[in-house]
Length: 227
View (cartoon, rainbow, N blue to C red):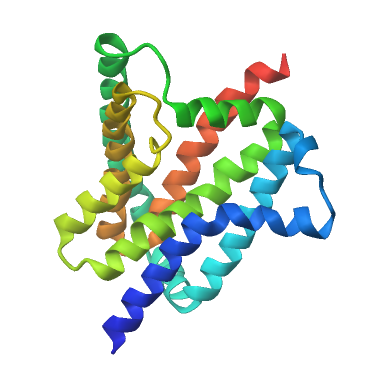
């Protein structure tokens, strides 16, 4: 019975993740926003709202587990962060090298997902720093790491499936077959997050490193918009 509820909870989280895009309809309906007149900034703010609502729901669903894993993280914070940095650095190297190879031999365009994020950063940089730098990593770690780890007992199947699913979801809006190759760099990072979660037994280790990674990249993207 416990396994049944675990699987049910994981399925619910996955459905909420994919359905969260519809949460934007709530403020649109409440404030009678004309969808034909939504600006780029308003679009980012609506996305921020939907993600914040999803965070609240994830916390409610996993409140006991998250409280336990929060305590686990703080039992050995320095060791967990050290573990996180080691796996993140390896994942980053694979990500950078694979990106270079893809851009050198297959395509000179960046992934559609990156283009979309960059466009949102251009119109609302500080809202995106909060959204992409902090909120999205928490959502993705709970969705791609915790739900998978709860349902998949085999260590390596969990790590590989979690990483590959994470990679695929980041290129799901591909416009050419070459863009599918970006599954490799995204998956390498996803696998490194799964490894550090498996090692530390706390989703907050992978979340902390995911926040660090996304925040640095977002800040690098924001800096040119300030000049």
